Image 1 (tube, rainbow, N blue to C red):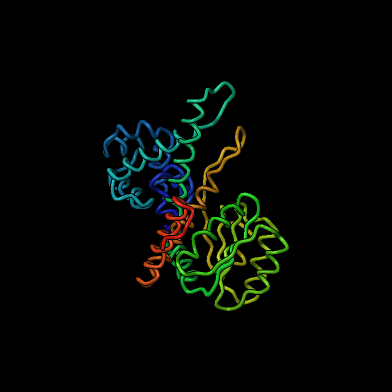
Image 2 (image 1 turned 60 degrees about the horizontal axis):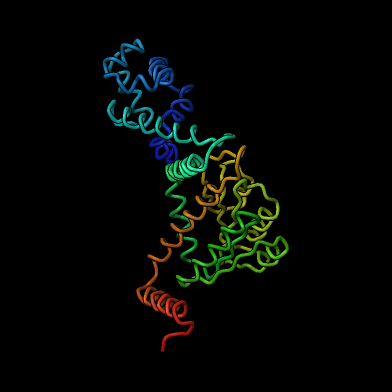
Length: 295
């Protein structure tokens, strides 16, 4: 099982079952179909009960558990319960006419929390490690993004200089070309696009790679054209409903991923850099209180 699927099983067992159904043995497929037909009911069954319902032996149920990444029947039930709870949170979060403000608060918060959990479960830790390696070793970093992704790029620009990594960010298509063209081996470019199809961002990353820079793509789908020009691709899969409101969860998830990356880079810095960051924060706090730098 792929790493992303193995981690995503925590909240997406039902999805994993559907995806793996065609490749299962016939007897194991009967167990999977029994679970998908009545997932709520399976939570009340014993191992023997599920085997009887599917018309298979108990060892077959155990084999199905192993095939989808569960450590036995008990683990399957735990993950199934989580998957059902997650599905309820997302399905009940659709905003409809007549929703009052307390209901809107609950629904919007629920879908964002559930979607962040979904994204975390599917994030490739190995890809994050490789991205950290590239950023920690970069001489400079340029962040590219347009629209909502541009906001993420600007936020990243605020974080990374704190850890001794000079960087810039642009949300202008012409400046992206200019900056990408000036990158060299030893530099890094991070392109952010939820769809992964924004041509200006794709072009900038392609140009940066042609100049020898290490290239990282942050996107929301593993089929994004942007990934073709990246040394490391970070796919942040989220759940969004755009029918009734403009969602922010894809931006939130990208911001969190950049928080993780900046923290991971910071942890590799020598102690003197952490002391400088602490001193810088002390100066900023003094300026906020008095408008002056400390003596």
